[in-house]
Length: 109
Image (cartoon, rainbow, N blue to C red):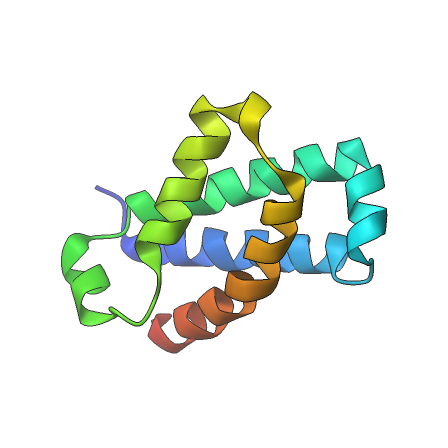
C-alpha cells in the first residue's frame, strides 16, 4: 500500500486546480462552460477517489473533515454522470472545497 501522503498531496493539487480554474468565475460562467464543468467533475472525482484510499484510522482521527461527502460525490459523478446537477456542484464547491483544503493542510505530514 502506498503511503497516504501521496493521496493527501494529490487532493491538495487537485483542489488548487479547481481553485485556479473556477474561483475567478461566477456561477453563470461556470454553468455556460461545458468543458470546465467536465474538468471540474473529473477533478472532484479524483479527490473522492484519493479520499477513499486514505487509511480509516486517519479519517477517524480527523472527523471534522467531511470525507464521506466527497466519497459520495465521487460515486454520483462516476455512476450517475447524466444526472449531475451543475448548480449543486457549484454550491458543493463553494460550501466544502476550502474547508477540505484547510483541514487536509493541517494533517499533511
